[in-house]
Image 1: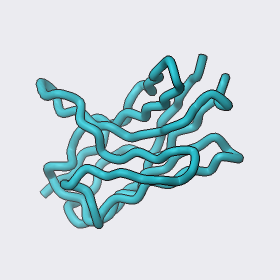
Image 2: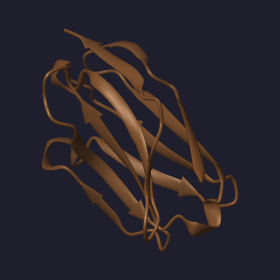
Image 3: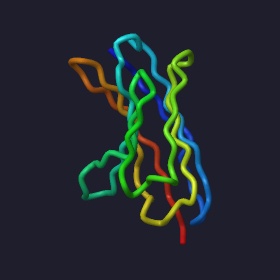
Image 4: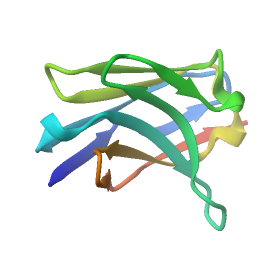
Length: 115
């Protein structure tokens, strides 16, 4: 089992920045990819960014150039630095950890961007 705890969400004005953190515990050695997804109420959850053990990254087109995902393997923590935030970035952000056979989710953290 892997447990994930997110932090860092909040309210920010458009153009501002936030940094999300996700700390993993448990069988962290089994994790190969960590990701951030987001969900607006009533909509499907969408991938925001992901990072592999080797450091390869992938971003949604809507956040490229504004968000940066990073990973501290020694601390079993993944970060999402969000700059130039827009009202349409408002959502609940979920951390996701994937192993070969399982996917794990955090409880989510609310990010609200005011115009």
